[in-house]
Every structure is written in C-alpha cells, then in structure tokens.
Amino acid sequence: MKIVFLKDVPRVGKKYEVKDVADGYGRHLVMQRIAEPATKEVLARIQSKMATDATLKKVHTELLMKNLEVLSGATITLLGKANEKGHLFASIHKEELLAELKRSAHIDMHPDYIMLDRPLKEIGTYEIPVVIEKNKSTLKVVVGAVK
Image 1 (spheres, helix red, strand yellow):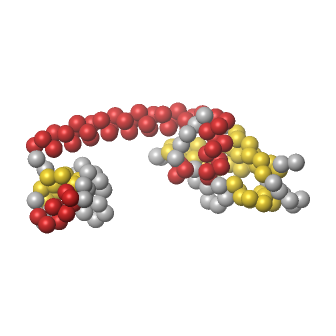
Image 2 (cartoon, rainbow, N blue to C red):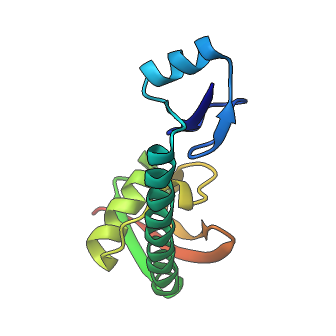
Image 3 (tube, one colour):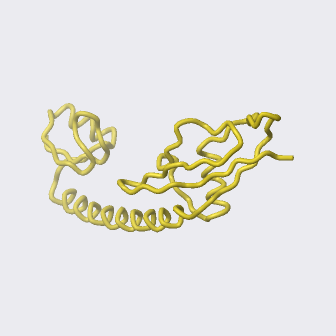
C-alpha cells in the first residue's frame, strides 16, 4: 500500500514522504491519521501544502534572523532575592529570560534557541549564547538583587 505520511514516524518515514508499506500497517497509519493513501488528489494537495510550508518557514527564518540582530545588542536585567554572598534564593531559568526578553525587547522565541547550560544562581553579568539554525549571537543578562 502506498501512503503519504502526514507526521514524522521514527524509523519509518518523514512528513510528506511517499512510501510503500504493508497493507495492514498502512491501514493502521491511516486510521491513526498519521498517513493518507497516496492518490493523485492527495499528492496534489500535499505538493501545495509543502510549498506553503516552505514559504512560511522562509518567512519565519527571516523574522528570527532579524530578532537575532536585535538580540546581539540587547541587555536584559533580572532581579531576584539573594543572600549576602550573592547567591539567589530562586534560580533563573530559560522561561524567566524569555519572559523578560519579550517584555523589554518585544522578542518572542522558542526556549530551544537559548543555550543555557544550567540556571543562573548568582548575581552578576552573563553572556548567554543564542543559536538559531547555524547563526549565533549572545544575549547579555545582568542579574541583580532586590533590595
């Protein structure tokens, strides 16, 4: 049975790939709405959907590159409760960084783009790498104490 995958299936096929599979497995994938039988109408619809997805991805990538340029000069400041030694009582995670970035610089991005090895637990200035596809930038984060 020839099918068109509508989603990625590990070790079987990728989205929009046309593949020949066993009849029973093909029916199972169709019932689960993971694939559709490869008819001429479905193939034409998938081709147009692939073109639309490609243009959307291109626009999304261009927007992310603009955000990356803005990000290279951006500095965000986060405040938290800390002890006398400068250790924060609550560490700062990617989510807090993204919320402050959205509030101050109006940049909304996915948490996977921020390469934070571990949460920030001390007061200070940090250079945090941001990687979008193969392009890199750094985000300057200043962590201060609430008085």
